[in-house]
Image (cartoon, rainbow, N blue to C red):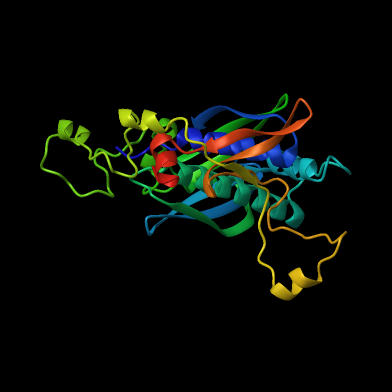
Amino acid sequence: MASDLSNIFKDELSNTLEQLLSKNSQVEAVVKLSNDSFDSTQLVECIVKFDIKGVSSEVIFFVPTLSATKFEYLMLGGMGDLKEHIDDEITDAINEIISNICGSFCTSVNAQGLADITSIKSEIKSSKIIDGSVLSSKSNTFEFILSLDSEKLPILVCFDEFILPFFSSITGIGLEEDSFTKPSSSPAISSVNVPTNTSMSSSPIIQAPKNLELLYNVKLKLSVRLGTKVVLLKDILRWDVGEIIELEQMVNEPLEILVNGVKIGEGEAVIVEGKFGLKIKKIGNEDFRLNQIGL
């Protein structure tokens, strides 16, 4: 069976919208689309290419007028009037939202160290305004009902045949055989005989060796990276008190959690009794964390 990324996707969808729109967001339900539901409305279509182990797949996001106009309005801080129709400015806003959702999703998946995925990355191929009648020709399309504070807003997502099994909790479709691994003549039960030095494993039941407990009191340096930037030596030499250095990190992007200088997850800054703290938003499983810090 392929790894199920459904919950990660739903979490990143709601978390990213919450960060960008400054509204409490949650995926309340996911239902298979009834093709005639949005015939009479316009949509913003965002085509996203996902690369998984060198294989390209396509996911198409459709954002109907009701959601698209509200998203752009909230991104602008609720200033001005709520538009009635989709325009180029709204399309650009939706493009940015979808790009952030997919980027956060890939980061979170990569942090899990899943054996059948290893790495995944995304790229927006196109964004445009289309008519709702186009949906009648789309299969494997699902409607995500989002709760944005007290308002219910839909986003439609169409999965291609390749990536479909990786969202089995949503689509109900799974792989009988992992398409990324070679068939084995050994019985399935033999898969538990995994060497103890395997760096990553897709099995959640593998326990850390007991002798690892001897290292539990070893002190490791935890740090949080706000952002990075490549600069020239000449720029460093001319810096003075009061200089402002612009980092590459966007204000709505998560902070990197580092242990001994190695990234193991992401989080957001919080205030705890007058001190800075960190709320973990994404973190790899136990095997991934041990592998990252060299244990």
